[in-house]
Length: 52
Image 1 (tube, rainbow, N blue to C red):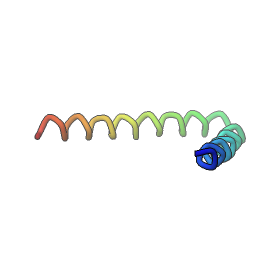
Image 2 (cartoon, helix red, strand yellow):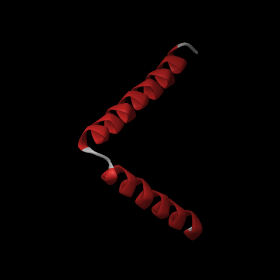
Image 3 (tube, rainbow, N blue to C red):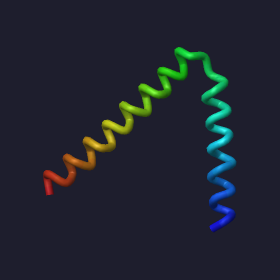
Image 4 (cartoon, one colour):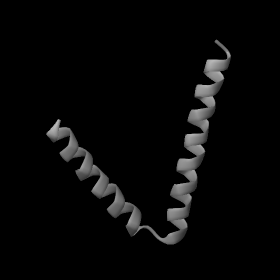
């Protein structure tokens, strides 16, 4: 379990460093893309539950 936590924190730090290195406009684009992808995943999940 400790190894998993260490890997998680290592990758999280790398992702945050990459995100902070982006220009503001690209940061907004990444944030917008995450929202859109999250919306599609939630929509797919809700629609798959409704159609059962």
